[in-house]
Length: 414
Image (cartoon, rainbow, N blue to C red; front, side, top):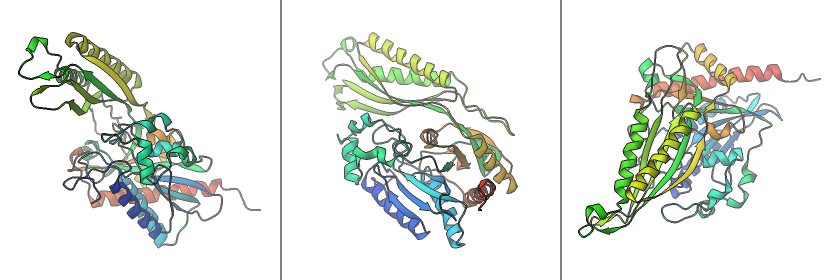
Protein backbone atom coordinates (compact mmCIF):
# COMPACT_ATOMS: atom_id res chain seq x y z
CA UNK A 1 0.00 0.00 0.00
CA UNK A 2 2.81 2.44 0.82
CA UNK A 3 4.90 2.67 -2.33
CA UNK A 4 6.57 5.23 -4.57
CA UNK A 5 5.09 3.49 -7.61
CA UNK A 6 1.40 2.79 -8.06
CA UNK A 7 1.83 -0.49 -9.94
CA UNK A 8 4.52 -2.11 -7.78
CA UNK A 9 6.07 -2.00 -4.32
CA UNK A 10 9.11 0.30 -4.17
CA UNK A 11 9.91 1.98 -0.87
CA UNK A 12 13.26 3.72 -0.69
CA UNK A 13 15.00 5.29 2.27
CA UNK A 14 13.67 8.67 3.51
CA UNK A 15 10.79 8.96 1.04
CA UNK A 16 7.12 9.86 1.67
CA UNK A 17 6.05 6.16 1.65
CA UNK A 18 8.65 5.49 4.38
CA UNK A 19 7.07 8.31 6.40
CA UNK A 20 3.65 6.68 5.97
CA UNK A 21 5.00 3.30 7.05
CA UNK A 22 6.72 4.75 10.12
CA UNK A 23 3.49 6.46 11.14
CA UNK A 24 1.36 3.34 10.89
CA UNK A 25 3.97 1.13 12.62
CA UNK A 26 4.28 3.71 15.40
CA UNK A 27 0.51 3.56 15.87
CA UNK A 28 0.63 -0.23 16.10
CA UNK A 29 3.48 -0.04 18.62
CA UNK A 30 1.58 2.38 20.85
CA UNK A 31 -1.55 0.23 20.65
CA UNK A 32 0.34 -2.64 22.34
CA UNK A 33 1.74 -0.58 25.20
CA UNK A 34 5.06 0.46 23.71
CA UNK A 35 6.77 3.82 24.11
CA UNK A 36 7.82 4.98 20.62
CA UNK A 37 10.50 7.24 19.22
CA UNK A 38 12.12 7.90 15.85
CA UNK A 39 15.89 8.39 15.80
CA UNK A 40 17.99 10.81 13.76
CA UNK A 41 18.10 8.69 10.60
CA UNK A 42 14.46 7.60 10.66
CA UNK A 43 14.47 4.24 12.43
CA UNK A 44 11.16 3.73 14.27
CA UNK A 45 11.69 2.06 17.67
CA UNK A 46 9.14 0.87 20.23
CA UNK A 47 9.96 -0.23 23.78
CA UNK A 48 7.95 -2.63 25.97
CA UNK A 49 9.20 -2.35 29.54
CA UNK A 50 10.30 -5.22 31.77
CA UNK A 51 8.71 -6.32 35.03
CA UNK A 52 11.36 -4.47 37.05
CA UNK A 53 13.68 -1.49 36.77
CA UNK A 54 17.23 -1.73 35.41
CA UNK A 55 16.40 -4.88 33.46
CA UNK A 56 18.31 -5.82 30.34
CA UNK A 57 16.82 -5.47 26.83
CA UNK A 58 16.19 -7.83 23.92
CA UNK A 59 16.24 -6.07 20.55
CA UNK A 60 13.96 -7.40 17.79
CA UNK A 61 12.94 -6.18 14.36
CA UNK A 62 13.91 -5.85 10.73
CA UNK A 63 13.80 -3.25 7.94
CA UNK A 64 10.83 -1.42 6.45
CA UNK A 65 12.41 -0.27 3.17
CA UNK A 66 12.26 -2.46 0.04
CA UNK A 67 14.01 -3.19 -3.21
CA UNK A 68 12.38 -2.00 -6.46
CA UNK A 69 9.34 -4.09 -7.43
CA UNK A 70 9.52 -5.92 -4.12
CA UNK A 71 7.59 -8.64 -2.37
CA UNK A 72 5.62 -8.00 0.82
CA UNK A 73 7.61 -9.98 3.38
CA UNK A 74 11.33 -9.24 3.06
CA UNK A 75 11.85 -7.01 6.10
CA UNK A 76 8.31 -6.14 7.25
CA UNK A 77 7.61 -9.75 8.30
CA UNK A 78 10.27 -9.48 11.01
CA UNK A 79 8.75 -6.28 12.39
CA UNK A 80 5.23 -7.73 12.30
CA UNK A 81 6.17 -10.99 14.04
CA UNK A 82 7.93 -9.01 16.78
CA UNK A 83 4.86 -6.78 17.20
CA UNK A 84 2.57 -9.84 17.30
CA UNK A 85 4.63 -11.26 20.16
CA UNK A 86 4.44 -7.99 22.10
CA UNK A 87 0.70 -7.76 21.35
CA UNK A 88 0.16 -11.14 23.03
CA UNK A 89 2.19 -10.09 26.07
CA UNK A 90 0.19 -6.85 26.33
CA UNK A 91 -3.15 -8.68 25.99
CA UNK A 92 -2.17 -10.86 28.96
CA UNK A 93 -0.80 -7.81 30.83
CA UNK A 94 2.43 -9.79 31.11
CA UNK A 95 5.88 -8.32 31.61
CA UNK A 96 9.12 -10.25 31.27
CA UNK A 97 12.34 -10.02 33.29
CA UNK A 98 13.79 -8.11 30.32
CA UNK A 99 12.52 -5.25 28.19
CA UNK A 100 11.77 -5.66 24.49
CA UNK A 101 12.63 -3.10 21.84
CA UNK A 102 11.28 -3.50 18.30
CA UNK A 103 13.13 -1.62 15.56
CA UNK A 104 11.81 -0.87 12.09
CA UNK A 105 15.04 0.04 10.32
CA UNK A 106 14.94 2.91 7.83
CA UNK A 107 17.20 1.35 5.22
CA UNK A 108 18.69 -2.11 4.81
CA UNK A 109 18.46 -2.65 1.05
CA UNK A 110 20.54 0.35 -0.04
CA UNK A 111 18.32 1.03 -3.06
CA UNK A 112 18.50 4.83 -2.95
CA UNK A 113 22.19 5.42 -2.11
CA UNK A 114 23.74 2.05 -2.98
CA UNK A 115 24.94 1.55 0.59
CA UNK A 116 23.02 -0.98 2.65
CA UNK A 117 22.31 -1.12 6.41
CA UNK A 118 22.04 2.65 6.90
CA UNK A 119 19.49 2.25 9.72
CA UNK A 120 21.28 -0.45 11.68
CA UNK A 121 24.66 1.24 11.15
CA UNK A 122 23.34 4.27 13.02
CA UNK A 123 22.06 2.07 15.87
CA UNK A 124 25.43 0.31 16.02
CA UNK A 125 27.33 3.62 15.77
CA UNK A 126 29.22 2.46 12.68
CA UNK A 127 27.87 4.71 9.89
CA UNK A 128 30.66 6.29 7.83
CA UNK A 129 29.90 10.06 7.81
CA UNK A 130 31.55 10.43 4.42
CA UNK A 131 28.58 8.81 2.69
CA UNK A 132 26.27 11.62 3.82
CA UNK A 133 27.48 13.57 0.78
CA UNK A 134 26.50 10.80 -1.66
CA UNK A 135 23.66 11.70 -4.01
CA UNK A 136 20.75 9.69 -5.37
CA UNK A 137 19.57 9.54 -8.99
CA UNK A 138 17.89 12.95 -8.55
CA UNK A 139 21.04 14.60 -7.19
CA UNK A 140 19.72 14.72 -3.60
CA UNK A 141 22.42 14.14 -1.01
CA UNK A 142 21.86 11.68 1.80
CA UNK A 143 22.22 14.45 4.36
CA UNK A 144 19.53 16.50 2.59
CA UNK A 145 17.22 13.48 2.39
CA UNK A 146 17.59 12.84 6.12
CA UNK A 147 16.77 16.48 6.93
CA UNK A 148 13.72 16.45 4.64
CA UNK A 149 12.53 13.27 6.39
CA UNK A 150 12.79 15.01 9.76
CA UNK A 151 16.09 13.56 10.94
CA UNK A 152 19.39 15.17 11.85
CA UNK A 153 22.44 14.08 9.84
CA UNK A 154 24.74 16.13 12.09
CA UNK A 155 23.87 14.13 15.21
CA UNK A 156 23.66 10.53 14.00
CA UNK A 157 26.15 9.41 16.63
CA UNK A 158 23.63 10.47 19.28
CA UNK A 159 21.35 7.69 18.01
CA UNK A 160 23.91 4.96 18.73
CA UNK A 161 22.34 2.38 21.03
CA UNK A 162 24.18 1.72 24.28
CA UNK A 163 25.05 -1.95 24.54
CA UNK A 164 25.61 -2.35 28.27
CA UNK A 165 22.02 -3.54 28.84
CA UNK A 166 21.49 -5.57 25.67
CA UNK A 167 20.83 -9.31 25.72
CA UNK A 168 21.10 -9.47 21.95
CA UNK A 169 19.31 -8.90 18.66
CA UNK A 170 17.00 -11.50 17.11
CA UNK A 171 15.43 -11.09 13.67
CA UNK A 172 12.72 -13.16 12.01
CA UNK A 173 13.00 -13.18 8.21
CA UNK A 174 11.81 -15.14 5.21
CA UNK A 175 14.51 -17.56 4.13
CA UNK A 176 14.79 -16.06 0.62
CA UNK A 177 15.90 -19.49 -0.55
CA UNK A 178 14.54 -23.01 -1.17
CA UNK A 179 16.12 -25.07 1.63
CA UNK A 180 13.33 -25.10 4.23
CA UNK A 181 10.71 -25.81 1.58
CA UNK A 182 12.79 -28.70 0.24
CA UNK A 183 12.93 -30.15 3.76
CA UNK A 184 9.23 -29.43 4.45
CA UNK A 185 10.12 -27.35 7.52
CA UNK A 186 8.32 -24.16 8.61
CA UNK A 187 11.31 -22.53 10.27
CA UNK A 188 15.09 -22.82 10.57
CA UNK A 189 17.88 -21.26 12.61
CA UNK A 190 20.60 -19.20 10.90
CA UNK A 191 24.19 -20.15 11.60
CA UNK A 192 25.97 -17.29 9.80
CA UNK A 193 25.50 -14.55 7.21
CA UNK A 194 27.54 -14.73 4.03
CA UNK A 195 30.22 -12.11 3.30
CA UNK A 196 29.20 -9.44 0.81
CA UNK A 197 30.92 -6.93 -1.49
CA UNK A 198 29.03 -4.22 -3.35
CA UNK A 199 30.90 -2.25 -6.01
CA UNK A 200 30.03 0.47 -8.55
CA UNK A 201 31.89 0.01 -11.84
CA UNK A 202 32.01 2.76 -14.50
CA UNK A 203 32.99 2.35 -18.17
CA UNK A 204 33.75 5.62 -19.99
CA UNK A 205 34.29 5.64 -23.75
CA UNK A 206 33.23 8.13 -26.40
CA UNK A 207 29.67 8.90 -27.46
CA UNK A 208 29.17 9.33 -31.19
CA UNK A 209 26.70 9.22 -34.04
CA UNK A 210 25.35 5.72 -34.62
CA UNK A 211 25.42 6.17 -38.37
CA UNK A 212 28.76 7.87 -39.00
CA UNK A 213 31.37 6.29 -36.70
CA UNK A 214 32.85 3.11 -38.25
CA UNK A 215 32.73 0.02 -36.04
CA UNK A 216 36.53 -0.38 -35.74
CA UNK A 217 36.88 3.21 -34.49
CA UNK A 218 34.22 3.07 -31.82
CA UNK A 219 34.82 3.28 -28.05
CA UNK A 220 31.46 1.84 -27.07
CA UNK A 221 31.08 1.80 -23.28
CA UNK A 222 28.06 -0.48 -23.39
CA UNK A 223 29.86 -3.18 -25.37
CA UNK A 224 32.69 -3.11 -22.81
CA UNK A 225 30.18 -3.32 -19.97
CA UNK A 226 28.35 -6.20 -21.67
CA UNK A 227 31.63 -8.12 -21.98
CA UNK A 228 32.29 -7.51 -18.29
CA UNK A 229 28.77 -8.63 -17.29
CA UNK A 230 29.33 -11.96 -19.03
CA UNK A 231 32.69 -12.26 -17.24
CA UNK A 232 30.84 -11.79 -13.94
CA UNK A 233 28.43 -14.57 -14.86
CA UNK A 234 31.29 -16.90 -15.79
CA UNK A 235 33.00 -16.17 -12.47
CA UNK A 236 29.85 -17.08 -10.54
CA UNK A 237 29.28 -20.25 -12.53
CA UNK A 238 32.84 -21.42 -11.96
CA UNK A 239 31.98 -21.98 -8.29
CA UNK A 240 29.44 -24.56 -7.05
CA UNK A 241 25.98 -23.20 -6.44
CA UNK A 242 23.77 -23.75 -3.43
CA UNK A 243 24.19 -27.31 -2.19
CA UNK A 244 21.55 -28.68 0.18
CA UNK A 245 21.23 -32.02 1.92
CA UNK A 246 18.54 -33.41 4.17
CA UNK A 247 19.44 -33.59 7.82
CA UNK A 248 21.78 -31.55 9.99
CA UNK A 249 24.47 -31.09 7.34
CA UNK A 250 25.54 -27.46 6.93
CA UNK A 251 24.40 -25.87 3.68
CA UNK A 252 27.37 -24.45 1.77
CA UNK A 253 26.63 -21.79 -0.85
CA UNK A 254 29.24 -21.15 -3.53
CA UNK A 255 30.25 -17.85 -5.04
CA UNK A 256 27.43 -15.74 -6.44
CA UNK A 257 28.09 -12.64 -8.51
CA UNK A 258 25.41 -10.32 -9.88
CA UNK A 259 25.10 -7.18 -11.99
CA UNK A 260 21.69 -5.86 -11.00
CA UNK A 261 21.65 -2.25 -12.13
CA UNK A 262 22.92 -0.66 -15.36
CA UNK A 263 22.76 3.02 -16.37
CA UNK A 264 23.60 3.92 -19.98
CA UNK A 265 24.45 7.46 -21.13
CA UNK A 266 23.35 9.30 -23.14
CA UNK A 267 20.70 6.62 -23.67
CA UNK A 268 19.52 7.57 -27.15
CA UNK A 269 18.75 5.03 -29.88
CA UNK A 270 20.97 6.75 -32.44
CA UNK A 271 23.96 7.50 -30.19
CA UNK A 272 26.86 5.20 -29.36
CA UNK A 273 26.86 4.77 -25.56
CA UNK A 274 29.59 6.92 -24.06
CA UNK A 275 29.30 5.89 -20.42
CA UNK A 276 27.89 2.96 -18.48
CA UNK A 277 27.65 2.67 -14.69
CA UNK A 278 26.72 -0.70 -13.19
CA UNK A 279 26.38 -2.34 -9.80
CA UNK A 280 28.34 -5.45 -8.89
CA UNK A 281 27.30 -7.72 -6.00
CA UNK A 282 29.67 -10.54 -4.94
CA UNK A 283 29.00 -12.98 -2.07
CA UNK A 284 30.62 -16.06 -0.55
CA UNK A 285 30.75 -17.66 2.89
CA UNK A 286 34.53 -17.64 2.80
CA UNK A 287 35.82 -14.06 2.88
CA UNK A 288 39.13 -14.92 1.21
CA UNK A 289 37.32 -16.49 -1.75
CA UNK A 290 35.03 -13.48 -2.09
CA UNK A 291 37.88 -10.96 -1.99
CA UNK A 292 39.91 -12.96 -4.51
CA UNK A 293 36.91 -13.04 -6.86
CA UNK A 294 36.58 -9.25 -6.59
CA UNK A 295 40.28 -8.80 -7.39
CA UNK A 296 39.99 -11.06 -10.42
CA UNK A 297 36.90 -9.24 -11.68
CA UNK A 298 38.60 -5.88 -11.27
CA UNK A 299 41.56 -7.15 -13.31
CA UNK A 300 39.15 -8.44 -15.95
CA UNK A 301 37.40 -5.05 -16.16
CA UNK A 302 40.73 -3.28 -16.67
CA UNK A 303 41.76 -5.81 -19.32
CA UNK A 304 38.51 -5.18 -21.19
CA UNK A 305 39.00 -1.43 -20.85
CA UNK A 306 42.54 -1.57 -22.23
CA UNK A 307 41.50 -3.66 -25.22
CA UNK A 308 38.58 -1.35 -26.06
CA UNK A 309 40.17 2.00 -25.04
CA UNK A 310 37.59 2.42 -22.30
CA UNK A 311 38.41 4.11 -18.97
CA UNK A 312 37.43 2.05 -15.92
CA UNK A 313 36.64 3.23 -12.39
CA UNK A 314 36.11 0.73 -9.57
CA UNK A 315 34.36 2.06 -6.45
CA UNK A 316 33.71 -0.30 -3.52
CA UNK A 317 30.64 0.97 -1.62
CA UNK A 318 29.92 -1.90 0.77
CA UNK A 319 32.19 -4.48 2.33
CA UNK A 320 30.97 -6.92 4.96
CA UNK A 321 32.73 -10.05 6.10
CA UNK A 322 31.01 -13.29 7.03
CA UNK A 323 29.05 -12.84 10.27
CA UNK A 324 28.54 -15.85 12.57
CA UNK A 325 25.43 -15.82 14.74
CA UNK A 326 25.92 -16.17 18.50
CA UNK A 327 26.10 -19.87 19.51
CA UNK A 328 24.14 -19.41 22.74
CA UNK A 329 21.24 -17.69 20.97
CA UNK A 330 21.34 -20.35 18.24
CA UNK A 331 21.01 -22.94 21.00
CA UNK A 332 18.02 -21.17 22.60
CA UNK A 333 16.19 -20.83 19.26
CA UNK A 334 16.90 -24.48 18.50
CA UNK A 335 15.61 -25.50 21.92
CA UNK A 336 12.44 -23.46 21.36
CA UNK A 337 11.82 -25.21 18.04
CA UNK A 338 12.45 -28.60 19.60
CA UNK A 339 10.02 -27.90 22.44
CA UNK A 340 7.35 -27.19 19.83
CA UNK A 341 8.16 -30.62 18.33
CA UNK A 342 9.55 -29.44 15.02
CA UNK A 343 12.83 -30.76 13.57
CA UNK A 344 15.79 -28.43 14.02
CA UNK A 345 17.61 -27.29 10.90
CA UNK A 346 20.52 -24.88 11.01
CA UNK A 347 21.52 -23.12 7.78
CA UNK A 348 23.54 -20.10 6.64
CA UNK A 349 22.04 -17.02 5.02
CA UNK A 350 23.20 -16.14 1.53
CA UNK A 351 21.50 -12.74 1.87
CA UNK A 352 22.68 -9.89 4.03
CA UNK A 353 20.65 -8.65 7.00
CA UNK A 354 20.85 -5.96 9.67
CA UNK A 355 22.64 -8.48 11.89
CA UNK A 356 25.72 -7.80 9.75
CA UNK A 357 26.12 -4.43 11.46
CA UNK A 358 24.41 -5.14 14.77
CA UNK A 359 26.93 -7.88 15.56
CA UNK A 360 29.32 -4.99 16.27
CA UNK A 361 26.92 -3.87 18.99
CA UNK A 362 25.57 -7.08 20.55
CA UNK A 363 24.95 -10.81 20.15
CA UNK A 364 22.81 -11.70 17.12
CA UNK A 365 20.46 -14.50 16.05
CA UNK A 366 18.04 -15.09 13.18
CA UNK A 367 15.00 -17.29 12.63
CA UNK A 368 14.14 -18.11 9.02
CA UNK A 369 10.56 -18.71 7.85
CA UNK A 370 9.88 -20.94 4.85
CA UNK A 371 8.90 -19.05 1.70
CA UNK A 372 7.20 -20.40 -1.41
CA UNK A 373 9.65 -21.67 -4.05
CA UNK A 374 12.44 -19.80 -2.27
CA UNK A 375 11.46 -16.62 -4.14
CA UNK A 376 12.43 -13.20 -2.79
CA UNK A 377 13.06 -9.66 -4.05
CA UNK A 378 10.08 -10.35 -6.25
CA UNK A 379 6.32 -9.65 -6.00
CA UNK A 380 5.81 -13.44 -5.90
CA UNK A 381 7.21 -13.63 -2.34
CA UNK A 382 4.81 -15.76 -0.31
CA UNK A 383 4.53 -17.33 3.14
CA UNK A 384 1.68 -19.24 4.77
CA UNK A 385 -0.24 -18.02 7.80
CA UNK A 386 0.52 -21.36 9.46
CA UNK A 387 4.28 -20.89 9.10
CA UNK A 388 4.07 -17.33 10.43
CA UNK A 389 2.07 -18.64 13.40
CA UNK A 390 4.83 -21.18 14.02
CA UNK A 391 7.44 -18.41 13.94
CA UNK A 392 5.46 -16.43 16.53
CA UNK A 393 5.21 -19.54 18.74
CA UNK A 394 8.96 -20.15 18.43
CA UNK A 395 9.71 -16.57 19.43
CA UNK A 396 7.34 -16.81 22.42
CA UNK A 397 9.10 -19.98 23.53
CA UNK A 398 12.44 -18.25 22.97
CA UNK A 399 11.24 -15.46 25.30
CA UNK A 400 10.32 -18.06 27.93
CA UNK A 401 13.76 -19.67 27.79
CA UNK A 402 15.47 -16.31 27.94
CA UNK A 403 13.27 -15.25 30.85
CA UNK A 404 14.18 -18.41 32.75
CA UNK A 405 17.85 -17.62 32.26
CA UNK A 406 17.42 -14.04 33.40
CA UNK A 407 15.51 -15.12 36.51
CA UNK A 408 18.25 -17.56 37.42
CA UNK A 409 20.94 -14.94 36.91
CA UNK A 410 19.12 -12.17 38.78
CA UNK A 411 20.77 -11.15 42.07
CA UNK A 412 18.88 -12.16 45.18
CA UNK A 413 16.95 -9.38 46.90
CA UNK A 414 18.16 -8.76 50.46
